[in-house]
Length: 357
Image (cartoon, rainbow, N blue to C red; front, side):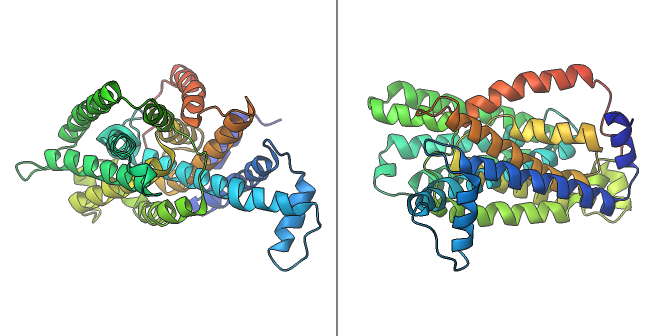
């Protein structure tokens, strides 16, 4: 009888292609299973057999009469929500794996350079100003602009004087996060509109309610494009983890590669925050857990983190919207409740260094 540890050791000894094929197949199947379960659950329970009929209708088959209402529920409510959740999880997963590799720190996450705080400020401004009632996409647009603005500000501070410093980037991220958080708190305190205040608090808690195909079209291309770029740079990230001198000796353009990865991770995180609010611990727990299981090779870790993040967010959203029906729990609160103690247990159990290639 093989133990889980022996299975993981055997898996790590396989080639990159074999590890990718096995791991991606398992996680892709999990995405489909969790997505299907999520489609069936809700205020209107829809049997899996009905979902099969509805799927067949998309390729020309006639849907039985019982499926008309259910088809609308799936096409217009549940399916876009699941797709947005998968995209958000993918973005946070790959961004977290990238940040942990760049900083060589398992505690790094996508919000470390101010992206989440900037997105939160942009969204709060859009809600507090009443623009969300005038323009359907005002909230995601403002959140995305705020996220990217914060990331560029932090990076600009890190390159003052013409020399990039990773330590300065980290410290600038801490300072900018605190500053933007203070602005958000000030807006919440002085805002007189209780309805707007409630909307702000709901958004800050993170959630996927009322997500539509318009949100998919808004964030999807940005998340997909940045994810592809990070996948292409995974080998270079492996070399950067060995040190700048070693990376240069292997032909890596250290400065340009680091900037490209930081911007791509910020772009993915900004797009995710723009359509879901702040969902905590996904970019921290998922890549770190997979690294402990599968090893630190980013050629495997980054694509696996993409699918692992998708599974995590879809599952969390399914639990959040069904656990206290007919009301909904906030996804960001649920991921924090689950992620924080789980991550602490991981840290206690795995104190060894996990970044040696």
